[in-house]
Length: 251
Image (cartoon, rainbow, N blue to C red; front, side, top):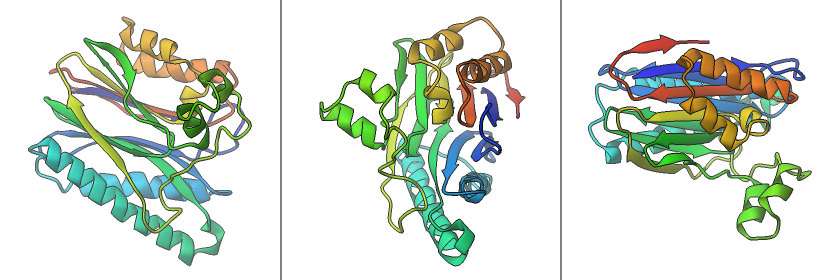
């Protein structure tokens, strides 16, 4: 596996509430995480960092994920447990009340990837069939689009674009979406926060992933593009490529 991850404050926000990482278990399988925190000054930082740090801690204790069923169960159980931790932390710390975070996380093996998410951080797959979004935003605007009340074009500029219907840590019980798909040699996975997808189109994401530039340059150029288009939000991404040669580039 080759991978890169980056996070950037953007051009407007005075602090970064995103958290991103790519972690390895005892069999060198990959867990990639992007979390976009929310809920007041510093509280978003707390929620997203808790989500990423706890997933890292749990993942580094794993020997090997043997099957998609085990991967889906692991992500579902661990993310729900972390949800309870964040919810309780917010309850116990007044300055953090109402905090929460999106999470998109993927277990990547040399045969399959399993992705889990809550909120509007996204996962995309590039493979022999093309480029497509794997996740479905848990947002008010996305529900309006799916019900036919507004168009995708209307959604881009809707005044309630940032309203989430689900997030981690805001309620005691939460529903996590999980799915598994084949991960063949040469396939690429992109995980990102909405600071990227609100500024960079799917076509631009696709073109960057298929470009000939090195992996870390792809990450830098995507962040630069989001900033060039305004950079009003924090921008985070992780790219994982199923290749035999190992390369690691952090933030």
